[in-house]
Structures are given as C-alpha cells and as structure tokens.
Image (cartoon, rainbow, N blue to C red; front, side, top):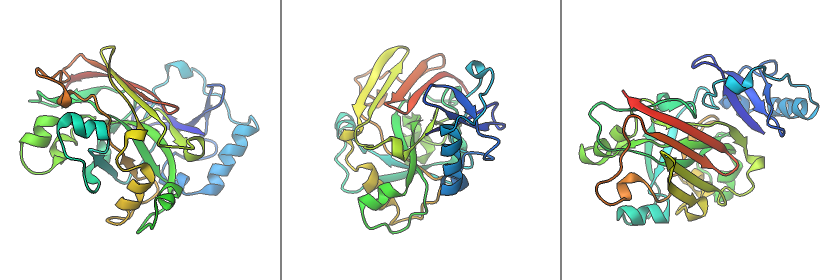
Length: 286
C-alpha cells in the first residue's frame, strides 16, 4: 500500500493512493498514519480489505491538494552517515568499520513539496537523497539482519538537507548542520514493506535546477537496511513510527570540485527513489 497524508500543514488527513493513482480517503477508517497504526495489523488489514473492495471514497480535488509528510508523530529520526561506498570515496572518507549514527529532530520533517529554508548565515547548504526506513514493531537487541527487516513497516523518500559548515567546521557533533528547520522533507508516500521485496535494489536520483546530480543505488550501501536496523537496536530501542535515514550516494555538493555548487535561495531540488515517489522543493531564505 501507498499511505500518505494530505491537507494543510498541521491538519493533514490520512489517505491511500490506489493502484490506478486515485487518492482515497482513509479518515473514516483510521485517525492518522502513525506508529500506532503501523503496529496494528488489524487496522492495516481493514485498510487493505477496504481498498480491495473499492469501499474507500475518492478525495475530490486531489490534483490541488497539498501532500504532507506521510507519517505523523515521529518518535525519533536516526541517521546513518557515510553509508555508501561511492559517497565515502568522493568525500575522501575512510569506509566506516561500524555505522555512523547521528540524529535529526522530528520537527525538521516537512512535506515532499514544501519549501526548504536556507539557514541564516549559510554558505554550504547541501542536498542528499536517501531511503527512509519506517519502523513498525518495537526493536531491541535484534540478533540478525533478517530480524531487522522483519521490523520494518515501510519505506519512503527522504531529503537529508545538510549545512556543511555547521556540520563540519563549527565544532562538536554533526547535529548542528542537520537540524535546521525544514531539513528533512519526507514522502510523498509511505510504501509498505510488502511492496518493496528488496530494499537493496532501489535507484536514487536527485536534480538541482534540472541537472542530474545524484544517480545511485541502494546496492552501494556499506551497511544494508536489515543490518542497520539490527545495529541501531543494540544501542537504543526503536519504536513503531521511528524513522531511519539510511545514507546518501555520491554526487553531493561537498564532493564536487571548487567552487562547490551549494544551494542558494531560488534553487529547485527534485529527487526520487524508485517505486517510492518523487519530491520537489524550492529553496528560500530563512
């Protein structure tokens, strides 16, 4: 299933995109798309049955409807740094012996087509297309990558916007360059795990002002999805509705020759992951 949330910011309602591309209203079945829903197989079964039976009403005027983040009330966003062989190579970084973990606050999440704000004083705002993993079952001390995959409810497109000066040159941890407002567009859909048979066979692409910048595949991941979930569960409990951003392939501005083409107000970024949908953001000054 392709689950999403539509409407004005803060007032989104749950929806489903059916096989014909028609937007269907879920608000008569479930209050929202969140961790509680993803952990409730009975509720998910009701949605599947209603969709298969043609019982879900069409959302009128869907063409002009804003698409919000596909997940409400996110608990935490765990991010994996330098998780692609080609991205590590372009930045001159050593291949990590273990996954690098940092966090983004849930309030960085915006809709897939919402405005991204360039932080005040920023000269090095960068792009990163990523595969986001959404947790559906409580995960703690998992013992295998297979168990890690079994705890995944679904997948989505994430844009891990980053300010490289704040991240690298201002001391401390990476978090300063990762948590500026609007720095995690998510969606358009949450695609349930049953529709993604192999998360290591997904293509990721990103364009800036129409020019292709990133063209990668999750096959390049150093630590694949199941192993990432297993590993993270050794250090913290993952709950339904938590998100893991699993890293970005080569092609970011930081890895390009000088002068590096960092983002500016007025730029347009588009990105997609195969089968998971497409995003488009215009950048403006904060």
